[in-house]
Length: 268
Image (cartoon, rainbow, N blue to C red; front, side):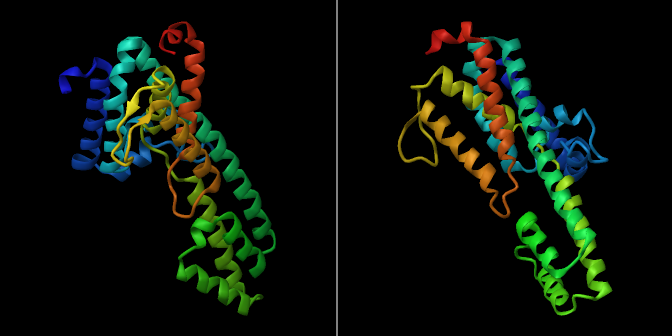
C-alpha cells in the first residue's frame, strides 16, 4: 500500500508528521501554534508567513490523522494525473485560498464584534452587557457560572462601579479572545483535494467508515460541502472548526480546475 505513494504526497506526509513530532515531543504544541498558526490579520501576533506555516501545524493527533489520511487516500491519484509540480501547486494554492477566505470572514466577524463591544463600553449597563454576551459572544457566555453570576449581580446593582469595571473587562476579553484564536492545519488543502477528486472522478464509489453503504464521490463532496456551509453559518456553541477555510479550499479547487479545464475534460 505504502509503495503506491506518489513523491509529493509522500513528502507532504513526512513533513507534516515530522513537524507534529517536533512540536509534541521536543518543543511545545502551544509554542508552535502561537508562532505559526494563522492569526487575525489586525492582531499584534499576526505575521504574513503564517499564511503558509499554519498548513503544516496541527492541534492534536486526531487532527493530524484526519488530514493525512485523506491526503493519503485521495492525493496519489490526483498527483498521477497532474504530475508532481502541478499537484504541489494545487495543494499550496487551495491551502492559501482557504486561508484568504477564512481571514476575510474572520476580519468581518471581529469587526462586527468590536462595533458591538464599543457600544457596551460607551454605556455599560446590565442589559447591554447581557445582550452582547448572548448575541455577539455566546461562546463565552454559555456554561460559565462565573459570568452568569457577574451578570446577575450587575442586574441587582446596576450602578455599581465594580460591576461596571468587571463588565468592561469581560467585553474586552471576549474581543481579544476572538481576535487571537489561531487557525492551524492542512484542512483547506485537503478539502481542495476532495473537491478535485469529486469533480475529476465523480462516479467513483467510496466506502467510508461512517457511512453504511458506498457513495459516489460527487455526492460525497456535495453533501460534505453543504454541511460545511451550514455549519459555517449556524456557528454552534463550542464549534471551533474553521468551516469557511474548508469551503475556501473547495472554492479555490473549483477555480483551479476551471483554469486547468484542458487537462480536466478527459475525466468527465
